[in-house]
Length: 75
Image 1 (cartoon, one colour):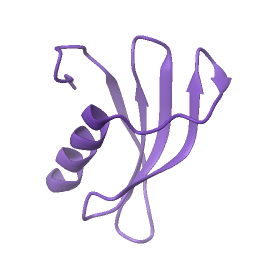
Image 2 (image 1 turned 90 degrees about the vertical axis):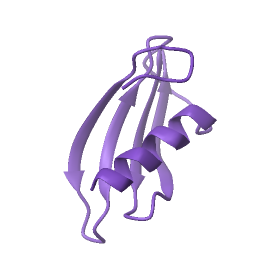
Image 3 (image 1 turned 60 degrees about the horizontal axis):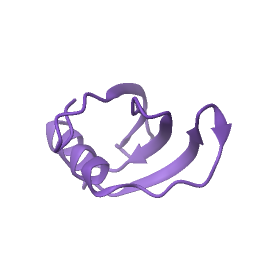
C-alpha cells in the first residue's frame, strides 16, 4: 500500500480474529514495523512494534491509521 508521501509499505494479513476483525503486519522501509489488530469498525490496537528489529513502543502514525481504516472497509 502507498502512504500520503508515496512511500510503499508492506501490509500482510496475518489471521482473522474471533471478534470479526483481523491481524496485520505492517512494515515501513525506514525500519519501523507493527503487528496490529483491526476491528470491523476500523479501530486498531498495537500488538507489537519494532524499529530496526528491536522491540520498541511506537505510536500509530496518521498515515497508518488511515490505511487500517481502508482495510477495515474492504473486509
